[in-house]
Length: 215
Length: 215
DNA sequence: GTCGATTTGTCAGGTGGATGTCAGGTTTCG
DNA sequence: CGAAACCTGACATCCACCTGACAAATCGAC
Image (cartoon, rainbow over all chains, first blue to last red; front, side):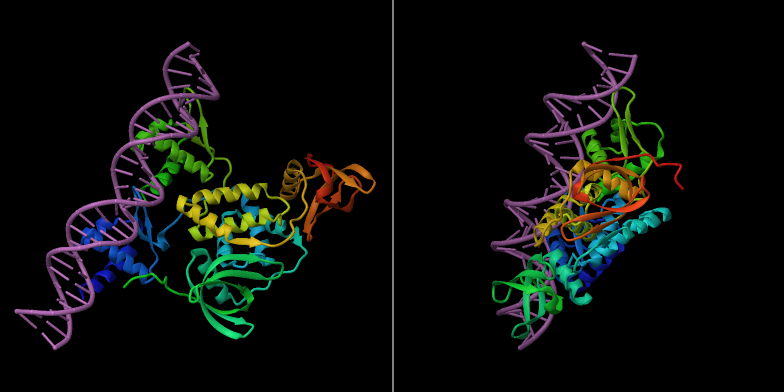
């Protein structure tokens, strides 16, 4: 099959570039029509490559790793408070999902000069909180659920409910944080009904493909 | 992604010069219309570069080289979660001081493309919290106290205590957040003793100069 | 070679973001 | 005042992504 070869070459071509490239340019390069190129790119997505598209003038395709936002410039004070607030949130487990947040805060903190980082440490030490952290679950499970929530993707979970463990395919509608628990309001994709799960009772989770995906 | 490239080049062009340069000259140099150049400059400001404009004859654009840390590059997901988390913190009043935090989050949000901003709004809507917000005080007072805390500067406050209102000069040692109250652990600089104040009972505040005689 | 399935091409739309044009403002300075 | 510069909103246009429908071409098995 020449199609599969082309798909592989296409993924390499995308990986090689730093900037976006239009579907038309790709079509020309691989000697196929524009329509076929769109189909190919769709196939790559179906194979869960992080193909990112930008519309309009100057747009085009790129792989997600190279996709960067315009830079943000903080003042020292903004950076300090951002990190202080964020770390507080993480330490107190007020946010159910914190991995991505943590990497973002690292980036902010590393923008501070050494002096600023020392001041920041002092600032954090001067803020404390009296309260109860919420219950959470295994890091690996939490990471998957974070992805599913942020990207609105369907998810297969093992849930330790009242009648023993059971597997379910769900999409997360919303997240509710109560005093000591985090609740996931989901749509059960198999039964087509709404259902609520407690985060700390999810024992396993993995992302699944969108039901409508083709070929 | 030609727009983002141009924004970077533009920031470099501004950084390179000492004197002001008109938007028209920049537009010509980058081969875009005047209107687009204004939009670009607006984007740089939104990304919090200190772009300074001088109006009228002989005016133009220049970059304020004074403050600002090195720029931070987030992924779309990091930016989304950072803003979601931060705004949650603000909405729930989990942080006693939120003005600076809010401006920082605005900067992060404005780095997202329109599509990302819409996704972010959806993400925020899908996260809620059940709880009691903490008590706070007047925005003007809070703003001053935030400054004093972050910068460790002495402060003159009017406090509505048990025996009526009284003025005190203090330095904030640490901030403790309890369930519904925020407590300020301070040193009373006049009496030289430690004292605790409740944030919501501070009725007025202003920064004072560092007392050089104290050692 | 023929049949059927897969793949591809062509056409005709739709959507969204960036840019340009136009028509106004406002501020500053000579 | 009036020119020069910064600003802003409204609108049209372009460009690129995206999708559906259907016919043509290609490929594989028999």
